[in-house]
Image (cartoon, rainbow, N blue to C red; front, side, top):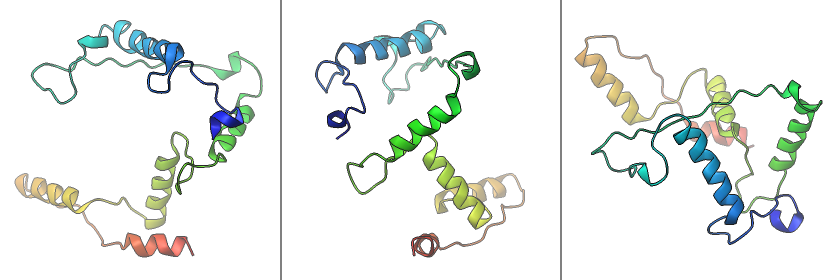
Length: 153
């Protein structure tokens, strides 16, 4: 859908490999996160399910001041985010941008006046509280299905 509408330039090459632009993006990540930081890179990164060796994964954080570039960054970025969210989704779920699920979860926590935990998490916290003889976290039951249905009416 996006490719036919001109919203995203193809990377070049096959869809499976991303072509030469996909390779370039991959190499950029390897240089910034692995080589620059002195961490493992490329085929030297251990398989994610293997624990026989240390992962030695690198990270790269880059701080950019948008004011050092073209004016109007905030407005142009908002337009880009709005247009991205407005794209036709491939399924019934809306198109999201980075941070959307987290903002929705934060709003839900605000509405419920607390953080939602899974039963397994609460059981683990109870075990820790018992082991270290500390007071267990105070909790209350919440019917999330009823909460979600009320919001969708």
